[in-house]
Image 1 (tube, rainbow, N blue to C red):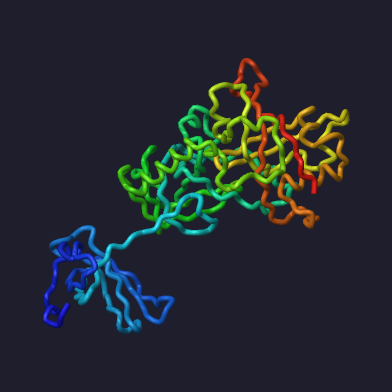
Image 2: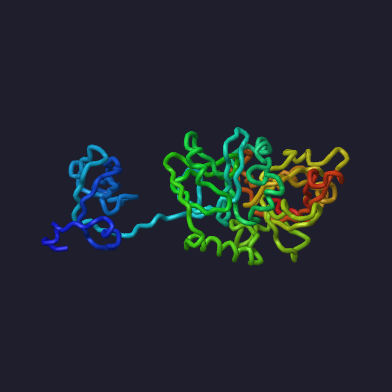
Length: 400
């Protein structure tokens, strides 16, 4: 743009389509940010302006200057500003997948709302999903305390008829709202809809991720025709079609050789598949982490008569369940009459406790292992309500 064009001003509606061109604008400020220094040597502020040609939603101009004094001094919204040599470009907001999130980070996510319900305090809970597996969490609590945190938590405590409507692959995260914004946000949420969640907080709740919508977050409906939505849906469908699609993403290239199973030719299933299977009694092969064991002390694994009776808390990206090791299945799992020291080493290996952690209170990261599960019932009159899970056909081979 030459000097003769310095006094030619463009309406905002025309400037919007003048991509990668320098334009001059005059507009009314409807929103402005406080001036601040960048990480470099200059300073920055942002203003949103409108004019008669484009009164909603307005456009944002990012203004840079050598010092705070050289930035526009905005007294209030409604001020008129003249901007010269503004470079117009199409910006984009980057979005993460659920598999990329980390604790205490603010992120932008594109997720599908798969279920909504009321919580214990009559508030609203939403559950969101994008088809990917959240990163497994390192466990900081003492082994003796972990059993209290290893209860079924999250969407898998919902009624079975609800569970059967949820995707069998990919992590489902709770979505909660900061106080004061829930009512305004609820009208935007609908089960089955994809949404963009911008600047939401990822936090930990008893060993699982949850997403917090804060006063600084933004929610936006997204068409199913959006390329980002189609990418996520296509990736999910391809994963379901793959022979390894139900293996946790974070266990690749393969689970550690911590266990061996008798049924290597059987297909893998997720714990959500186990919970939602159409028959009460069935057999499955899964890749899971053992996050807790009860009883905790190896000398208590067997009854006075020598019968194994151990409850393991299992998790994968889709769910968390309890499964029992009992009698001959325990003999196969732990080996022929191991000593207490060998049992303790095997327990520690399974739970991700290193040999140097004598106090068993350090951060641990249980390995991914294969196991065979079978479901059964305790009460024929209430088969589904009394359904339990038991590990069988599995041998723990690591003892170092």
